[in-house]
Length: 278
Image (cartoon, rainbow, N blue to C red; front, side, top):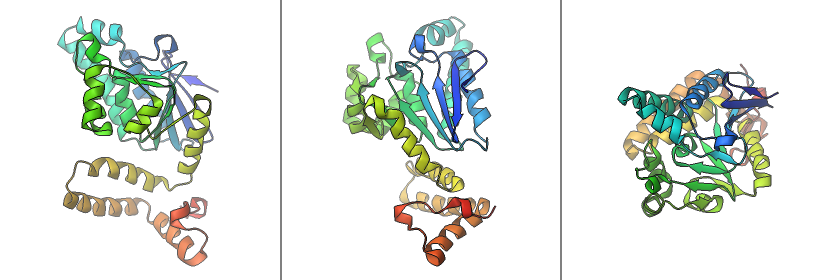
């Protein structure tokens, strides 16, 4: 049964240990308002440590993933309150994007339609991203006289490389899901009618992995990208030790199934976590 946040801007279902979380303003192409930003943080908080949630998928109701920030509610109405209003709205948006970047569970962006401007923040925050081939991605800020803020410039430069980032941000032209996959904004683009099935396949694989190792891996990949090799090497040694301290039996069980039972091969799949001791 679909549940919604108190004011209805976020909806979610939990099915077979997957939380399907949706932006729920289809009449506004799911643009993000201060209300939605507050409610999204509340929903993420509520789901993060639930035992019946192993993976979180973020998508949008209707024809859009998210058309970015609500120009009226997020910009005009908060700017009318002065700097205090602007800063409050920024904190509410950036706080849930930050929470999503370091979420306890694996996260997937399922981009079913329009993804614009501020939508690049949660897009980058998700660990994996899949898009419909006809989804539209755009940084339209230049078209109405501002720069791509809120992290959007960082996201496009980080994911697509210098030349693509410059063209995308300066021209204000959209790219479709196929081009977004080519550029690296998403992992894959698939036909719209097969998008949920493909994302479901990915969730099924992730649910078979050791959850402690998944969290440590998510964090490691994000952290080491900005480190020198030597610093990354040292960080990863400590991160592995920390992960083992939380889940020493997981590593031992994986090795046991490989060496002793010969029931799996690491390069061809995950060990059977159901046989692991608590």
